[in-house]
Each structure stands twice: as structure tokens, then as C-alpha cells.
Length: 409
Image (cartoon, rainbow, N blue to C red; front, side, top):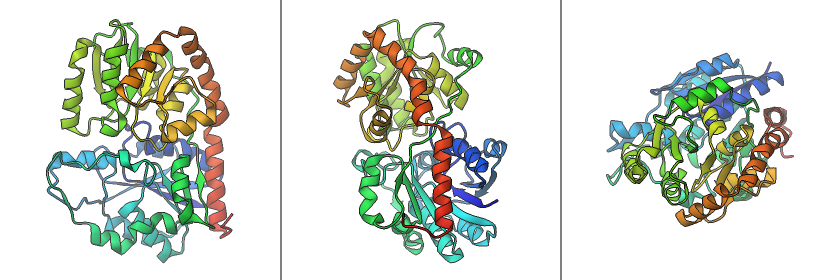
């Protein structure tokens, strides 16, 4: 059985909706198609490969460094969560010693991608890249690095030059994007080479009644009250500030706002809590929750909010559809693409401002029939357009052609 090594910048099972969710859905599908998988992740607090092992994959960790002068210990978690530009000579040596891999697949770029690029060239093993985050398209909306006004000096540039960090996408044998804008942005660099937009997969199995009850119990004082939910790490790019302000203007006073996601940036988390004080006891910050409870929160919610400022794919949207939840989503990037693929119009928010969100939320909450139609339509959209089986078949097909040397298409 051919083997693929997936290299990731983090693997924390509680980080629902990102690379972790993607690999846990993809790897069993690849295995059914004859590909074994091994995942390599940085050795960080919270890294846990037990779910991957249970899914049939191998799992190994590597030493990683963030060579940033002025970075405090409290900044490190934010760097890990939001894609800090890590350096790992350890992973380079490990890949060079690898004897069985037929394919390498890196799920990030920059210096860690450069490590995979060098190993691929020296070992004569093809490599794939999946661009899970905006790299060229929509980068103007991306937040800056951790530090909150302090000067941070990145000392890792020489390593990046050594491994060709800027050529990771250009030199890859296979490149997947997860939205059309990113694909269009890279097309000039990939003339005559593989470049493919990949719709990510979603587990169609819905939350159990026990999980839904458990999810409600996570929220102090909620009881059976209706609630609006947002599930995303607390990061400026995700638009929590917009959600709080719009909810305060549009939601009835009997409704609660629940926010679940990792709190990797304490100053920003404090800022959001201050903004939410206007809601009193109706605002709830849960931090990270287990993946099955994240899905259960979607299932139990009256409405799901996804007001991201940039989003390569936005897995929360099809996950909400899978649970039969009604979701409002910023009509940008990968969220826009998912809406187009599924022919979903009701939940789009074209004006990604507080006023635009407040207006659309008011309209939606007043349209009970429209919300019910969305709840009914969602699971079928997932079955038709976001099946893991289809994703795995496309990835395995690209692997097969790359290992046979049959690119370009």
C-alpha cells in the first residue's frame, strides 16, 4: 500500500473545523482507496494524535521553533493557532530518513512548506500542497502577528531562504486550493502544472439527542432558551466583534449569544468580553469544546453566524447545513464558493458590516418560513456536494498521477 506523509503546522483535536477536521475526514477515505497515511505535527502543548491513530493513521511529532525576538511565552499559543512561521530542521532530517513514503503532502506553506519542498527534491518523492488559508487572495483582511504593539523581530529568514519557502507552491507537483479566488490568484504560477479547487468534506452523521443536551448544559443559565451561536477561534479575522454588535441590535432580549472557540489571544478575548457586557448574562464564551459538542451546538442553535473577514473555505457553514441549522454567512472567499456550489442564497450577507449583519439578522429572525426551509435543505446540500468520499477520490487521483509522473493534466 503506498504511503503519504501529511505535514501540518498544528494538530489539536479541539481545534474543530480546521486542518484537524479535514484530516480526520480525509484519511479514512484515502485508506479505503489504498493509501496509508502518517501525520507529522509540531510538538506543542495540546498536540494529540490519538484521534488520528484511531482513524488508522500513523502519527509523529517534531521539534519546532519560532525564531522571533521579543515574542513572549503568552504569544506562542497565538502563533501556533494562527499559522506562525515555524522552523524545523528536525522534520527535514526525519523526512530525509523516510524510506517508505510515495507522496508528501504539506498542509501549510512558508518555512515548513519549504522543509517538505527540500525533502521532496532530495528524495525524488513528489509533494502536494493544500492551501487551507488565504495566501494570495483576501490577504488584505488578514490580521498581523501577535505582539499587540510590541516590536517583534523575525530571525528565521535565512532558514526560509535555504529551504525555498517562497517557492513552495510554485514547485509543488500537486496544488489544491479550497476556494476559487485563491485558485485564480495562483493560476499564473501553475501554467502547465496541477492546480485544483477542492470542496472539503463534511460528516453527514447528525448530533445525537444526548450530545445536544450536553451542549446546552455547557452554557450557564441557558436552559431551553433560544440561542445564536458562533463557532470559531477568537481571532480578529473571524468577526466576533461584528457578531456581538449586530446581535445586540437585532436579537430579541429572550435570546442568548454563544461563542465557542479557542481563546489563543488573551488581550483580544478580553476586548470581546468587554464588548459583550452590553448583553449581560445573555453572552457566553465557552472556549474550546469537543468536536461532537461543537456540532451539537450548531444543531441546537436557532441561528448560526459566520461573519468572517477572510475565509479560505469556512467548514462551519456546511457543518451547520449537515445539522439542519440555519446559518448566515459573509458572502466572501470560500463561504461564497460553498454557497454557489450548494445554490444557497438565503443565508448570504453581502454587507459585511455591523449594520449589514444587524439588518440581515433582523430579516432572518422575522422569516420563520425561510428559516425552516433552510433547515430542511441543509442536510441534502451536504449529501450532494460535500461528501468525504468524493474529496478522497479526487485527492487520491492526484496522488496517483503525480507518482506516475503524468502531470500536467
